[in-house]
Amino acid sequence: MKLSAKGRYAIKAMINIALNKTTAPKTLLQISKHQGISLSYLEQLFALLRKNNLVSGVRGPGGGYRLSEDPENITIAQIIKAISSENHIEIASEKKDEVIWDKFSAKLCTYLESVTLGSLINENSSENEENRESLENVPVEKTKWNVV
Image 1: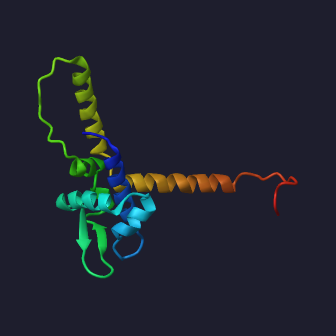
Image 2 (image 1 turned 180 degrees about the horizontal axis):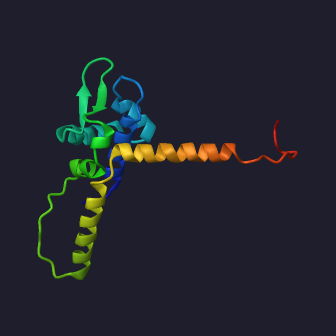
Image 3 (image 1 turned 120 degrees about the vertical axis):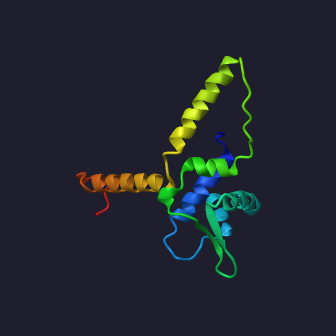
């Protein structure tokens, strides 16, 4: 499994769609503007995501993309594997660094199979709530810099 900018963009785009609170699908143009990456690059990524049944396209005016499943059922490993172009060929290696890297990669893959889009979003949402609540309970000293 290879972590790359391509993987990061795909994961962020999927999170962007998952965070969409409206019933309308998210357009690639909206995602492109939000992430600051080219529309043609996103089209390539979404062709792969669609091929692997992670997103579904809605045609016509008001069309765009939706997640094919609940965010809790889509793992980060699935996203990375969907956009990864490598066809991993097992080659017996005597090079110690390659053996170590392959073992690390397998552990990373196992971990990413346990992380879902939903868990990432929920974890971040609960952290934001905790931070917001803790800031609300901090006493504010009145100084000449405080605007009251």
